[in-house]
Length: 252
Image (cartoon, rainbow, N blue to C red; front, side):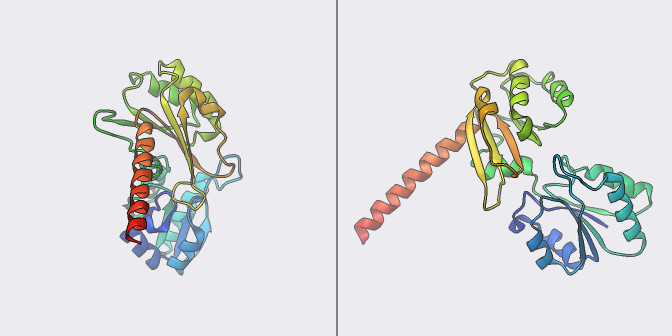
């Protein structure tokens, strides 16, 4: 039995061990944020989607536990394939505990967590020397938990990455500012990271609620001075491209 992280989406970000476990599997229970076509190319196992998406019907967590345990006890090689990393807001800890209680041996195969991958694919480092030496990862769908965490953090001292919070971005921005964060703190929304439809918005914390991300794409919020690095990188990239084109024209 393997709890496997699939990273943000792109199958090229799957680890070597993740691919090996898929090749060996008899049953794969996968999340909604997995490239299904790539999955079916990678394995001959039976594959069932048990993922959860906001405001949609989903398989109860207890049912997922029963499916894993029953199949594993039947001697099947089971992969529970989860978006991002199994233990970063993926309920992998709950599944691991259920397996332990049922006496089912298992392993964890780490994946690239979306909390880091999505910002960096958009050109935003979650830490940067002289700007942010730490980052905070929150789940944005539980307001009380957000408030409790923000009470323990000095405003504008860390980078903040909020998963599952795009739909509540206006309320979250208000809550963050209510805890002392400056209204002009740089902010970003990164949707569909590593997919062909990847989309990024940047602005300030006070503008965050007015942004209009594309519907249907999962995303993360990034709040902090590190967001400014994206524009610096983009400017440098445009300058390098222009220099290359000029040089090519001269040589041509």
